[in-house]
Length: 497
Image (cartoon, rainbow, N blue to C red):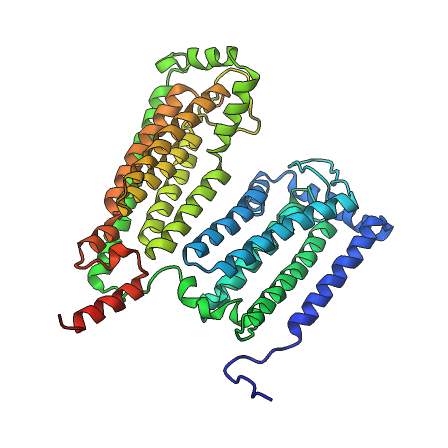
């Protein structure tokens, strides 16, 4: 009999007990909800009514709940899973890619099948603050978030050590809990919908983790404890987002401080310019500056069902969810390929600055929407500036800057096409749907040009790529990971001839 591996933590019965309890809770809730057991129905309806009375009059709480619940939407959670899977594919960790895709797809199928089988209606509250579609049990947001974010946690657990591991686990647990609570606060799910989703999500995660262990065993690899070591501990080098860098000295710290200060100063100055332009434009609301009155009215009178459908598609590309997914995917791809944080910091700074400037400018200017029929509901108060146009311009132009700066093939120039076309389509669709005046679009384009210029000059997103190309030898240009390239370079220097 082989001796036990003393280097690995001893397994406990806690995971098995937890999964068993979760499966039992889901099974019991499934039966009780399907049979419409009166005590459970009473608790669910009473909780929904009490929470609705608490939330309905609190606009700030509703806004926060809607923002949190967005992180559990199908587009976001499966966008995160797909993006992470793409990054792992670049690192050639195919088993982990398959695990993420199968786990996410299974959660999607479970949600659809269970809702159809149970057929529970959504809560009906006195003061609705949000609208949910489809059946109620289980909560799709809660199920998708615990499965997708939990799977990402199990994948990257080997790369998290010490305090970072505790922080990583705490963030994922808190995020999943807040998403479930937000569904109850918004009155679109009962308490048992959320608890049932968490229970079946834990069960499904355990089943897929066990299947992954069986696959490792069949490949002749040692068994692991997923909750302690993650799914694939030996992949730690590829799971680490970027190469470790030497500790920055005082000079580098001062340089980073100067860059941060420059970004803040540039943001304040640009915000003042954009807000000032907005105040000048709206000072006399009756003027037809750049066709502010005639163009929205002309577009409204020439609406057709086909154009309306296309405008909805183009507008969707500029929504917060779509922009977040595109930006996140870009960050993951550049981390996987370059193993440098600079492109991520550049894109994050750019988009956070754009969002905060949009919110601040809209709060200052408070420009009314065009006086035509609006095709979208729930629009914010201010039409100036266009957040869709600004966000679309920043993200797609930034992608073009990064791709052109980090690659050398002719195809890199193709990324200029979406950098030009996407902002134009977002602008046209916004005016067509009655959301913005032409000067709202001009203000957003002006902001994007100034903010992109300032951020690119200060952060220098392609500096690492230029330095790598200046290094002697073909190692870096071959696309090898940094540590392998460094090792090969050292060997070549040590070997004479």
